[in-house]
Image 1 (cartoon, rainbow, N blue to C red):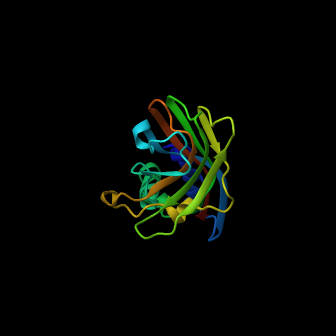
Image 2: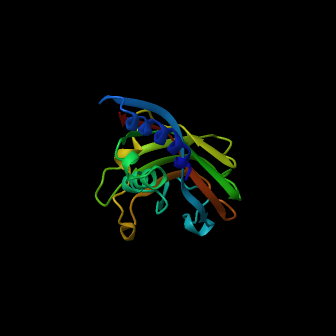
Image 3: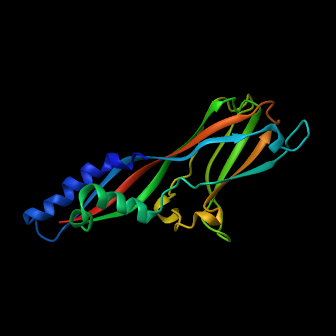
Length: 196
């Protein structure tokens, strides 16, 4: 996870509090963050309905690699120390881009995908991306992402055994003829408040 790229910036700004800059809050961001949420997921043609035309099919994937908000805060503390971390508050993690990349096979038989994120059991699904092409979706899908999706509010609370959070993909097109192995990355803009 590339959240570590923002840690030196946060550490430096929080360290300013040690030189007596008063009791102001400094806002920083956007700081680009990459969250690899799915790695090496395999879809087999057998996962789809046995028909020539998919119509509309849903496919669910649990996001066990997505860190919790507490895990992100702990990364800041581990990197910069507890004192510095106590002066940093991550205020939002705005979703900027969702990209699915096929590492084996491709998405060329699929004509559209809508992605929904479900945080926990009984939680309302949130649409986080959609893509469509009459010619098929190819090897890399760069989803259209709605504005205003704050991942910080959507991060899991930490019970991996529950199978949540999960992505639910609604697919249309024709079933693939071979396995597809793919990764999904979330790209977000992090914003933080540093108390000086």
